[in-house]
Amino acid sequence: MNSVQLVGRLTRDPEVRYTDGGTTVARFSLAVERRFKSENGPTADFPNCVAFGRTAEFIEKYFHKGMRLGCQGRIQTGSYTNGEGQKVYTTDVVVEGCEFVESKHDDSGESQNANNGFGPVDPDGFQNIPEDIDEELPFN
Image (cartoon, rainbow, N blue to C red; front, side, top):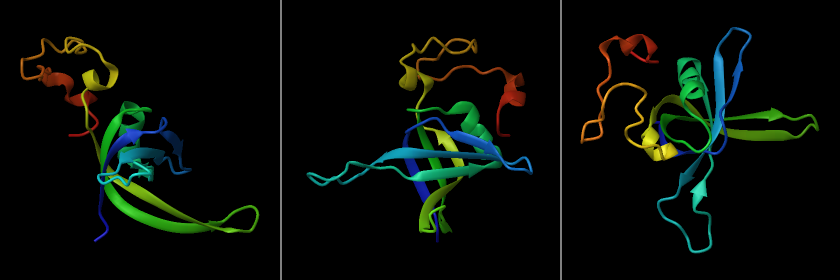
């Protein structure tokens, strides 16, 4: 089974392009901390990720450099010949779904009362969201 789950921070803003057919493509890399760290070795990995369609549009709209994101997908390998005639091998995580991992408060340091006008924040950290907001959400 080819299945990947990652949680990490975006190392740069997603690079978004559109195919000739109109499909949105978002490319980005994540800084993913290693669970077990060797004494003098690296403490994180930086996998390259690519998302298509609605997932790419969601990433473009809501994520930027430094934000934590959780994603699920699969590993895809490939190769191409560069302009110098050398064969280049690639490994990407094809993101099939993603989600927020931290609240806006955690990411930007804003107070919990800065809640985009949706009403007061409950003591448990949740806020009341109006019923008619469904049209603005990227998923149903």
